[in-house]
Image (cartoon, rainbow, N blue to C red; front, side, top):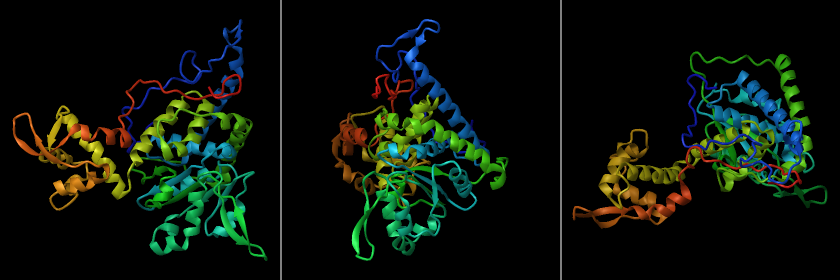
Length: 428
């Protein structure tokens, strides 16, 4: 399903993933099985298959309910929101509590409406509009973490004065991304230090990007105003929340018994480091659901993470320059050396890249040197095949940085494993 006029997160090189529990494919339990002679299916897999069929259908229903009221920027974003909502029902199983950052460039982009739908489907929602950090601290428990919901987050962090005033809340949101990161506060008549748990999933909606420390811990949904011709159903609390609450109850019934299984699963992730920490709960929920969800979840993870990589102005340019230089080398048939002037021609000639507007005359040799400085890459006098000497770069200077910061995507059609619980109760 693709919404008219909606900008998609493209992932042209994304892997083609096998459906869950297909014999002989990655992700299928490999222990010995007893065959049911009537159906010639592994008898031990029957219950798992039944759970996954029900889970996939439930996520499909949740996805449809979200799409009924809000137009998301892409199918991947829609999948991500549905998986994030489902993951709130297993918070005690996670090592990290991903944030859902719902941001847009202006008013009337559907941010608050999406938060309305999320509020009625997540586990144990706690709306934090105008709530003090102290009240939020006291509302979070290790036994049953709430799902924090913050609308108009730009009013909390949008200016330096507001950000300074709400530094405690930002600290809570940052610390609460990882388990066992309590905050210490002096409390009680004896003024003794007390540790307050912070671990809880949170959704924040606002105009413009949130602080970098929050965005880096978030599944980011970049909303846009509806284009002419795009239609959604009006949301009426009294009429529409019963259906959302019914889905919420089904999510609880499906996922609550899977707590121990979810804790043991270690899915193969398409990303690394903090992005993997943030997306792992969503991927595990998709693997528990089965069907097409493991494939869809990993496609969303790769595409949306790639889109967000380096969106901050400074870090983003430093990552983007590596990608664009690799593209320039490819356009030149990957020569061993390339002139600085020729490389700048490629970079400044790309109308969709930021380099032509990097300065009054576009990206200059000096500007290129500054962007590459942190990677230990610099130009030098090089001898070229025609015998001429000029300033340039050797391709092997970039190999390490490309591998570390912008690795090539996996070839299309390459299988990606999913981790599922084996018949013996361990992750396979």
